[in-house]
Length: 277
Length: 322
Image (cartoon, helix red, strand yellow):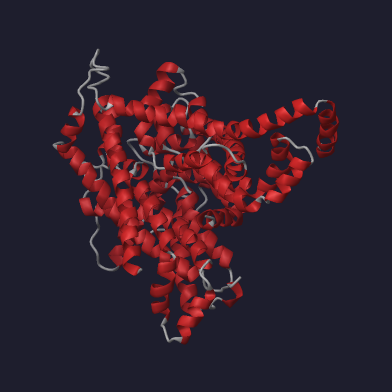
């Protein structure tokens, strides 16, 4: 690996990157500042840039003025179930595309990749009609979970990982020992795929948690996800900005926590997905 | 568990070798399909079918507020109407404008960032985490934060600009100013993500190439231009396509950036109403399912055309090099 032969960074590189990180982090830091102050503080000139003492009060307000508790619970349920389902279906499907020979696997894989181009908007009305009139799932969590239970990105991601990370010899050895395909999945594929599964899991969890468009269409404020509650907070006539930003903070905390705990793996996963052909 | 599986099989196989053999073949031919089935079922039911159904709806005059209009076939009439619909053309212009304003700086900045992140340095992971952080925050949260920062009277951005003598800008009101603000939100969220993708590709470039170039007297900038960028071409193309697809579907940012009563109009003069917002507005604001469906399909066709144009352009450029 050429890593130890890379050019060393000079002061200019550190300065530029430092500025980039500062720009990246500042809006989130500022959210914390605003969420811990009151409306008047936010509107003072020159602006106040240090956190205040109002955070707990604001969080209490956010929870009492909106259904934030329910919204957080809903988002947690939906994100967890979607994540579990996507990780499993992607691992199974990715394994089949990576290692099992079958008729039509090439065109089918090409189909999977092509479906990534289809925008959500394209099916939104029929999808809504299906949920509302046919299944009577509008405003129920199933409407968010079932259509998201498997996706092309996850399948492709796991396939790319397993093509290179799962040695054919290991599978052959399993076959010779008399393993069925199910046995192979259980004893060889799942243990090997674990690192990629956790990366895919985190990416899926964050994407589902952050999703706005489809929940906006199919759910109502009676049974919201956290992103809907957040947009509701912002659409009042008289805006309490410290409250809005408290909502933004509460809605972002779970994904930021996941990111801080697992950031290194997420970065590796994103970078791996980019280079493995 | 592993032991019981491998121990149980041969014994049973010895008893009924033919049946076991057949079951084994069945397992080999069938199970791949079983494993890929969930994706294709979900896609068929909730992706492909709605998409085709939207295509059908786009050729009807279906309006929810007009009883009996469901299934009123009008052929390509809705698509013809799009071409003289000033709001559609306006949304198209906004989408392309915001798309260019966000995609171009985003990818150029990402390239520079990736180049710098590729230096040997201390605290590498911390820098990478820092630039990726914006990407994990939700569209809704990010937009609301930036609405505050872009506030006319008390926003931090106007205050900062004021230090340099710039008059307060009403970011929501103007066309160019609102495009700039929305593009800034998109750029802020996606630059770090693209930088990591570029960085991954950069690390695959053999160091010997740079060494040889340095011996030949090539400057750093020349090396970047003549080695890094050409070696990264496939990755850059990938990012251009993914960002373009994202830009054409822009929805949450313009919706929440609007501070007026109806967020789907995209500003008082529709100055930042994107195609996605416009189709949403047709569906849920005006109950025009048929027309809204035509807007959605037009969006998709636009994506296909632009992606195809990118691929063709990339092939041409490759041809010029060779």
